[in-house]
Every structure is written in C-alpha cells, then in structure tokens.
Image 1: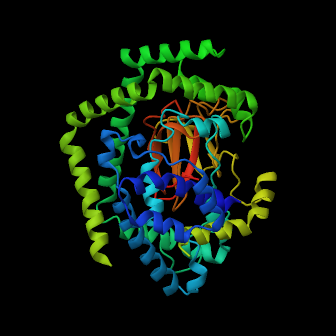
Image 2 (image 1 turned 30 degrees about the horizontal axis):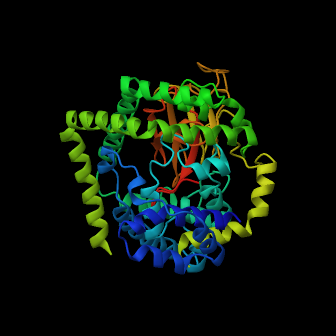
Length: 309
Length: 140
C-alpha cells in the first residue's frame, strides 16, 4: 500500500512533463510501475502541462535532468564505496536515489502546495492534508540493518555514530555527497542561503502587495458566501482543527473543496503567483552577480558528474 | 527494479514495523523530544545561530502545534510552532524541509544534511517539516 502510494504520486506528477514532450517518461513509468500503480494512474486525470507553475527562482535550482545526472554519479560512488568496505552488493539496496521519471515528477511538483491545496480532486479526497506519501526516510532506515547503515550513513538506526574503523564521515552516502559537490561547500551553502533569502523576501513582499490583498479579500468574500470565515487562504490551511489528525474529516474536506472553488473563481493563484514572480525577478536582478556565480557552481557540479562516469 | 522501487518494495515488507514504531515511542538511545540534539534528528532552536532552547525531532511533523521548546535555555516552554529561528540537521543524508504552513504547504526552507542554518521563509513562521531525498528532492 505504501509502495503504491509512492509510485502513484510519482506517476501522477510525472504526467505533465510527459505531455510537455519527454517521450521516454511515460514508457519508463509504465514499464517500471506495478500493475496497481498503472491502474491508479489510468484513473487519474492528466494535469495539463500549462498548469505546472514555474517561478523565476527555479532557474537557480537543479532541473530534473541535472538532478538525475547528480543522482547517478552519487549512486555509482555509493555502490563502489560500500562494496569496497565489504558490503554485499545486494545489501546496498535500497538506496535513496530515484529514476529519471521521479526526478521529473519532483521538479514538476515543486510548487504544487505553495499556495496550499489547489487541485479540486485533491481537496475532495484529502482536504488540506497532502495526498498520502511514504515517509521516505523512515523507509530507508527501516530497510537496512545497523551493520549496513554503519557503512551507508556512518551511524546506526538509533543515530549513534559507528565505531568501525575506515568508514568515511557520514558513511558512503556522506562521501558520495562530498565527491559530487566539487565546489567548495561553504560557497554552495552561501548560494543556497541567498536563494532562500530572495525567496523569503519575495514571499513576504507578495503577502503585503495590494493586488494580492485584494485577491485575498475576494477569496474571503467567496468563502463567506459558502459559509466559511477566513481572512486569508493560509488561515484556512492552517486551521488548528485540521491538524489534530493525520487524515481529513468531512468538515475539512468541505472547507477545502470550497477553498479551491473560490481560488478558481477569483483567479487567486494566478494573481498571487504573478505578483510573487514579479518580486522574485526584481530581487534576482538586485543580486544577479552572486546568483549567477551560484548557478555556475551548480553547472560545474553537473558537468563534473556527467564526465566522471 | 530501480532503487526507489526496491525501496518501496522493502517498505511494504516493513509496514508492520512502521506501525509498531508509530504506535510506540522510539526505544533507541538517541531519543527524540528529549531536548538533546543527536544523530539523525532535526533540531529547531528558539534563537538564531542554534542558540536558546531547542526541540529535537526524529520523524516528520505535519503540524508543530503539540510541541514546545525544551530544557532551560531562552525560549524554553514556548511553542515550537511559528517560533523557531534556526535549525540543525543531524541526518547524514536526508534534507530537512521546514514549511511555512501546516501539512507541508507554502514556501519552505531546506536544511541540508549535517548542516545548520538560520531559517529564512520560515523564520518564526515554521508550521511543519518533512524529510526529503536529495536526488531527486522527493519529500516523504
């Protein structure tokens, strides 16, 4: 069940990219999915490619293809490292690296919940809760023995660093991350923090922007007509009544359905995301040199990973 | 089978374990919610630069409302939700993603493996957090 949900999410999110022209993705998904996942995917509506939201700062994140190149390089590094430390090749798996389709779905779904629930079918099924996904980290730790984890991450499942000699810091996964980083880690972190700061400033600027506030007011009036009292969309998402349970109840689902309908009828997300994109562009221009230097580090990383294999 | 599918298959085999772990608190030595920042945990701090009182989490949290900062440092007893200024990720592989809104919604701050940072988007606006693979950055 857990596995199916993971695959289903990947398949569903991969579809817009497939529609946008990546011919290999659907075949890849269909071949690799379990029968159950394929059936589920067939029952889901295909999200049109134009509904995938992009923002200017996306230029300073890895694309799906770049992400996949780094994943392949890191994975090769981990396998070599782990087997050279005596781990049986079969015991290395599972590893937390995805397929090209999974990289594509992650990139396409990047902003899916940026403005909280936006898809009427998701709202009807899950309310404000995210569609069930697997706890990827729990899966990884529970699928390995302590002896395997000592080699892979340099610690046992209870978080205690391994005492075993000759294991790199952070295990083979830590060593692989360093090997594929190429750039000076401090410079990479500084770039990540700059991107984060620009994103944060643009988000907060958008929340104070008159066009966004007008759109919130229109949304709020629409919600009031449906019998719900919220000043702003995130207040509805963050209503404490929803978050005492892992699944949505009927009241939450009814509210979320009305919310998405009001977002659609007032054009809220189009306005909000356009204003946010405008603020991002303005802030990117103000830090262009630093951001481009960070992008060059990412490019160097991808290029080194492509030639290393 | 690809690695993530193998991972998924392995997970199916450990559902019972997951249920047991979910149902009971962890028995391991690095216990979460104990106010000590230990291996494999995400630690949220009341002040910038990983100072002040903290709360340590081992597993993802869809809403921080039930948790308070622990210990005797500045901010101890204050709700974690919307009051964290900085974070440290003690997991060697997984990225911790801290969200502005509950249920992993809104913008987010990433805390890369074995790193610490002051929060940006979610500075004093942290509502939930999830763990993510790095390549691809898929969150659970």
